[in-house]
Length: 312
Image 1 (cartoon, rainbow, N blue to C red):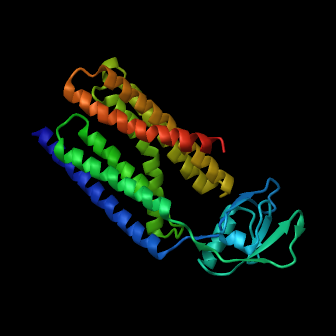
Image 2: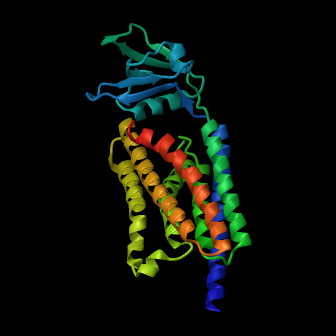
Image 3: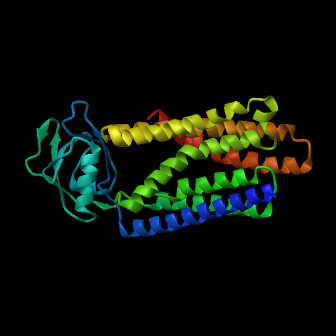
C-alpha cells in the first residue's frame, strides 16, 4: 500500500515538473522570437586598467566590422555612456535595439577617433540555441519512451529525471530581457547545469547495481552532488556580490565546463566497465546502448569543446 502511494506521488511530481518545464520552454521560445538580442559582432573584454573595453576579435561581415571597428580598438563609451565593463556595453546596445544607431567612442593605437563610430546592431544568430533545443527535445523524448516502456525497470525514474533536467538545460535560453519569465529561465538553466552532470554520474554508479550500497559507502553519495551545489552557490554569490565583468562570466563558464567534462568522462568510464562485466544478454544490450551513447556525446564534447575552451 505504501509502495503504491509512493509510486503515485512520484509519478504526479514528475508529471507536474514535466508539464511545467515544457510550458516554460514554450513561453521562453515565444519571448525569444519577440525579443531579438542585439549584437555588434565584436568580442570585447575589460582592460586591466579599467579604462574601457578592448576588441579581442571582430567577426567578418558583422556590424562592428562594417562600421570600421578593428581588433585591439579601445571602446570608452556608447551613446556617451562609459563602458568600463562588458555589462555596460550590453545594457546600452539593448537600449538601442536591433537596427538602431549606437555611437561608439573609439581610441585606436592610443589616439581617440575624432568622430564616433556608428554601429547598427543586428539580431544575434540563434541557430546554435535552436539546435540545442532540438537536442533537449530528443532527451525528453528518450526519457518519456523509457519511462512508459520500462516504468518498473531499475533506475528508470532516475534516468527520466536526468533526461528531464537535460531538457531544461538545453531548451531554456536566457534572452536578456530579464523580466520575471526571463529570470526564471536563467536560474532554471543554472540549476539544470548544476544538477545534470551529477545525475548522470549518479546513474552510472547506480546502474546496473548500486555500487555505493555494495561497498557500504552510501554516505559518499552527497559528495557527488557537492560540486554542482558549489557551482550553483558560486552563481548566486557572483550575481549578488561580484562585479559583472566579461572575465567573470568567462571564468564561471569555464568552471561549469570543467565540472561537466570531468563528470561525463567518469560516467562514460563506469558504463564501459559495467558493459565489459555484464553477464546477461539483456543487460549487455542495455549497457551497449548506454556506453555507445555516452562515448558519442562525451568524446566530441571533451575534445572539441571543453579542452579548447578551458585553455582559452
